[in-house]
Length: 366
Image 1 (tube, rainbow, N blue to C red):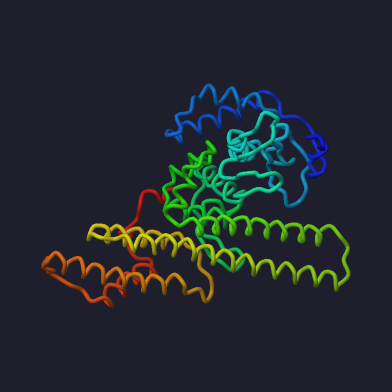
Image 2: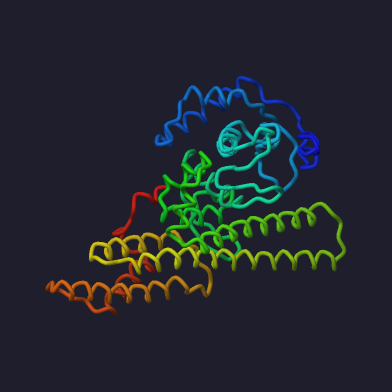
């Protein structure tokens, strides 16, 4: 097995200088305060957090193009930051990487077995992208990133992290809204199975694993694009080589767009189809409509993307019929009964021309 230093060098990370103790202590103060104040349900001890973080080694380093501006290296439990960053930028980036430090589950030989939502079996990892997305969403919430609407790969979507894992953060927020953010974040930090058990229960085991695979696929394809862009910027290429490379990049971009929308559609249908089938009361119908309406504010959209609109109409017709059956079964008089078409058009009007915040849920603050 190669040493940690050899693996670091293989990754292209070259240490320039250590970060001094005073600055490390300031980082430890900053991250400890955020962890304890923003995630009170974790029941963390501030002094313990500060002590553990302040004992970490942190460095300024040369890092390859395309690599994140900060990196936690589990083999030696050190943090590395790209040269040229301001200290404020370093502090904000440190939150994400320090969460990785607390996520680690190793065996007696120091072999990593679990990192938050990611499991390692021999040389293969499962759920790496799901974990990165959740940690970044936690980080964005903790440091106070504002929600922004961005467009990447032909998809326009809201995200709390426009600069780091924006697509994955959008999708994990869709999932967290449906499973509950507290369960998502606690499992991410403490590396337990509570979130994934709930994920499988609410979405179906097959769908949950497919969504997890699609997250990893998105991360893998984006890394391919980064590597090809680096080649274009750093190597002299013939016109034919350049064209082939750019054509490959465009092919990957189309794959990202398709995978994102397919994943979003699977999240939507696997959750709401199951909930619709379970409905048995008028109150559950109200909650279903409220949840679906709020969910519409989270999705990504693209030219010629009509899946959500079509699904919304069809599921509302199904729910409307279920409501009529419940009322008829209970012999309850209906004072004002709007037609199915009227209900659908009113709902769509609210969604697609802005609408009121009638069904806004406080959990969307993440």
